[in-house]
Image (cartoon, rainbow, N blue to C red):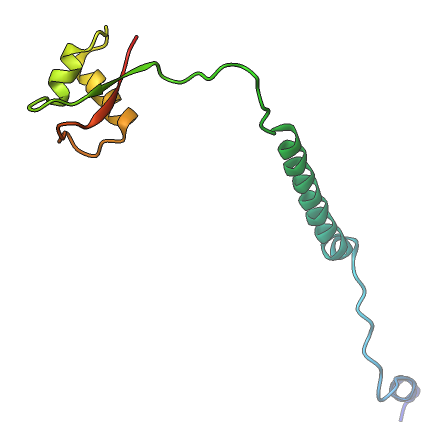
Length: 130
């Protein structure tokens, strides 16, 4: 064996001897980006949720209905009793109103909760007046 071969053999032997046979696994280390993702993202989501809850609760406190002492602002109406043979058209045409007949028929139906145009004699209706 030459001197060079002996040196190489001794270096290889030392490398094998110095390396532990059962080396423990290296611990996982988080990078800066990993820490941000693992810790910062949930913290950011929690902060956003708290901010949204705060805004909703503040909005509900500011948007409360307030009672008023002002007079009612209802529809002025007169009460009529339906006679035999009267229709919504004839009642709306005879009403003292500047509103068009078709629009007045719609208002009468809404005001009295009518589902159809059928009227019964003796039925009481409320007719809007101007």
